[in-house]
Amino acid sequence: MKILVLNSGSSSIKFKLFEDQVAIASGLVEKIGNNQSKIELKNAKTGTKLRRDTYIADHEKGLKLINELFQESGILHDLNDIDGCGHRIVHGGKNLTEHCLVDDFVLAEIDRVSAIAPLHNPAHLAGIKTMIKAAPKVPNVTVFDTAFHKTLPDYAYMYALPYDYYAEYNIRKYGFHGTSHSYVSAKAAEILGKNHNEFNAISAHLGNGASVCAIENGKSIDTSMGFTPLEGLMMGTRCGDIDPATMPFIAKARNLNPDELDAVMNKQSGLYGVCGFNDFRDIIDEIQNGNDLARLALDMYCYRLAKYIGSYFAILPHTDALIFTAGIGENASIVRKLTCERLKHLGFEIDTEKNDNANGETLISTPNSKVKIFIIPTDEELQIAKITENIISKK
Ligand code: AMP
Image (cartoon, rainbow, N blue to C red; front, top):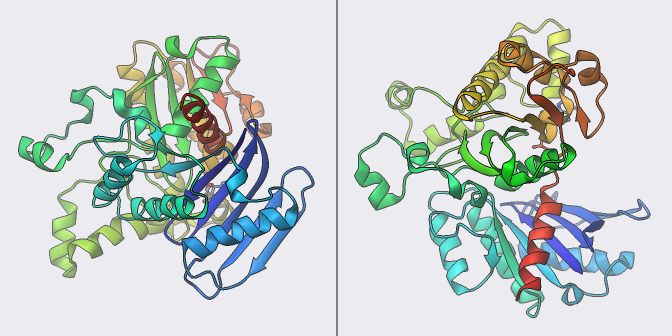
């Protein structure tokens, strides 16, 4: 089966084409609507790349170019020839809790939920509609970041706000990165020879966005992101947990409106807010150059991460594994080391040599460690392709 996976952002389309669950091509349409827009496609078999620097006005033009580059590279005759298209959707809201085939209800719901996911859902919707137009016979499947967290109990997803806000606006914790947390935890269970539905883990997805998830018997029971992907850990440019009362204080002090406050919390905070760098590679370089604020940012990041892992260790009846994944989790050995060192007394014992030399999927705990510690590279696109294949096979 040929499955195209699309991750449509507000100014980009990330795409990957799979044939029988093996990636055969991938690429990125960037800076849509900007005169520096471009598209690049990589043929996974030959390693060859095709690139076009051209004005890409909108998602429709972007998809048209994806199709043209597929044709030019000989990978695909036409978009209509694929068996299905899987779309990554950040927020499913309260009604879209299962990955599913796209229909009018799904489109309307994604649109409705845009009010609480304005950075993501409108772009996802544009991606789906463009795909429907370009290849009307190809079934489209939506795969929600929030779906894995549908198993959160009410006492975990409720906020201690007036109940009316939940009843009227569905304000509650939804959780994100579900596709990644479910993929890496299933992979860790497989490595340990356990059934996923009898497996308990704490998964730390540490990319530009970052979240931790407590998984009991293969199901998410708590996660650090909330109503939006802002709650929880300190991230590249997002503040994560803060005292909510700081925001009205800052609004008054700096005369900021709600949108400006939102920008402060989402775009000007986190690692960037503390030290002026949001990429861990730069932060590590800066620390070596003696930058104290970069060191502070690293210490804050690992301290906060350790606190979340410790709290999930407390609520799980037992923990089989701790998993690090995504850009920082997979590559920043210093983050794994500093975090696990704080958790040693709970039975998380990291093997520093394995940690320093890890490359790809690696067990980095000592033989004595009560909790197995893994690095597992995430593959959200493969997971989306598998889910898409599964859903369209049942059609
Ligand atoms: P992601 O969102 O999963 O693509 O992760 C992106 C982030 O991973 C970047 O902003 C970096 O902070 C981090 N990252 C990627 N590669 C490395 C690396 N080799 N060492 C440290 N951090 C890295």
